[in-house]
Image (cartoon, rainbow, N blue to C red; front, side, top):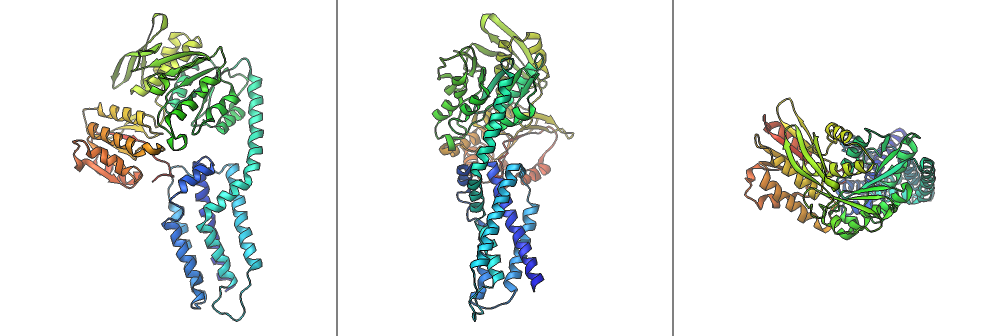
Length: 535
């Protein structure tokens, strides 16, 4: 009997630890921010998965009513073992990254669970002469199930307990990064890039152009938070670097300023101000104020490069520093603009028109107005840095598409894939659908779950995207439940043939459908890929 109970403890304990792992994974995807994590939890706290645990808990304590020795424990163990198998087989788009911080949270969470179990062992005394009262073993298993049901509470408690530790660690890292940056002065120029969208692509383009003549370091991937910037400086910055391109992300007011206070940029590019992260910003005016924290932080001899194609960029004055405005469509008040844009299967040719009669003809492998706009912002900075037109022209011609951002490839079966899966937004989504709509030889197919974090405009903007899809493509595959109603309503508001409107629960189902449908000449656009925190 002792061996049986130990086996049950092991199974239930392993199940509890896997619940912790999932909750910490979702916490990590919410940037370790408790407020965002709990917003994500809202409505999920007692889902079907946890309701099963509640049922197991009631079954375990069936001895209150009828004494069935060992059977409840066995059934709980079987159920937990089954759920363990299901958890281990589950595939995630963004698995948990076991950083040192994650291990700290995991350790404290497990420690809290052990403390709860120990307290139960110390204070629970089974009433003598009552065969229906829970045994010590049942109480131990019951505590583990209760902790599994409320695992998010235990994880949250661990994060709060670790808050002073994390603040001390972050402060030490911050001071070290600041020391490194001071040691690079005045020989290194810091260029900040922020915007609701387009900042990552602009960063890559600028890095490729400036690398023709300078030693450049850029924040890799999406390292656009204060800790991501700090990690870049501490781990990657070398004494020979002369330019640091720093991407600056933001989900609430003050985020860009926090990064600027560390790196002290001399130039800045503001690529866009649009309705992104409205769940945390609440208003477009807050988005604007936050993005322009970059311009506000520039020194008097610096340069702000601003994309006037966005209303809330164009209508925001900049008086503290020289400002150069650029545009592709709203060119009236822009000093730089892209003209004579011509698309072809080989890419795009266009001309940069600027002050003093500047005319710079460029050819690129990139397609889409958004990419031309991002290139234009990068070219302005390169010109200000004194780069030769020949060097700029050569670099632009060699720039490759950034992965998951209108990345185009052709399969051996003759199907064209347009991968725009990263960080979809209203402007970028419309442009991506426009690119898909420009193809005329095969069927135009879009696969999308829609856009997220749009606050009270979530339905409206996704419905507009659905309407644009209905007007531009031949087959629409809507993935998941989160934006399903808005997207399908938008598609159905057009003359779109609803027999070609396909609704599936997951990208795996979408791929299964495409495998049976695709034929040579078809063009497929993958527009956005929601993280695991959205279904």
